Length: 293
Image 1 (tube, rainbow, N blue to C red):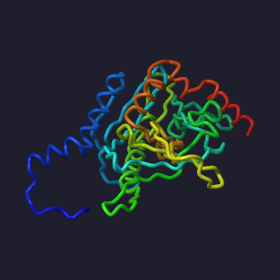
Image 2: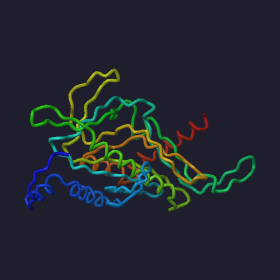
Image 3: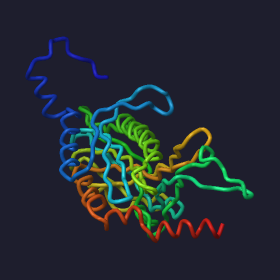
Image 4: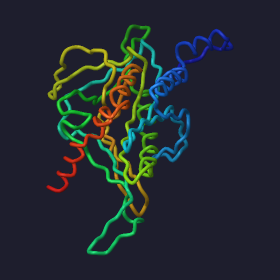
């Protein structure tokens, strides 16, 4: 933390903070946009961190649904300044990274050797991986592998770190864990489809990407981006102690305000958008792979 001046903070200082640095004001702007598109939103609630078991505060949780499909977004907002933007280093996505998961929730009915199992011992969710051309994350497209905020110090030296961004990254995954648990108990019908996507949102013009070949050769120069999907491959347990399923979050989305707006318009406004997430062909392909294995 920088050393503080000894004088009292004035109303001018507070106005300067609220006008240029406040994460809360940025959260409200994001929240207003999500509600404008019809998403159900929670703002500033608490969840239990799955690792530390401590109470943490999330920025925004948003959900959109179409018939039997529901998408939940775990959103953390960071009002970073233009003199300290994010730079994401990207490589072409490998085939094994080209997936996202959806969960199918239904009341369990199962038998083993002719004996019917209690629903207490059978998960009511079935998490499957949508891969390849049906995934949100195509093989060969750029995927984020390293992130840093970059600025220049008063002595003209380059300053770079990922402390603040890493904290937001961890918070959105922690909030996503609670949404995965909530998804498990979706009971709006005999069958529900669910997906959870963690997101870090920054102001427009504050997200840059640079591409590399898999051999480490830089391709071109850094370019501004509105959305960058960063590989996470994070597993979350869902269900009960007697009936456990595992849901994998493949990527964390880092987006600008405009990037999030476009994502919502493209994926969460009509049946075509939801089919990009809950691809019928992708779901059928996942079950076909199971039968072949």
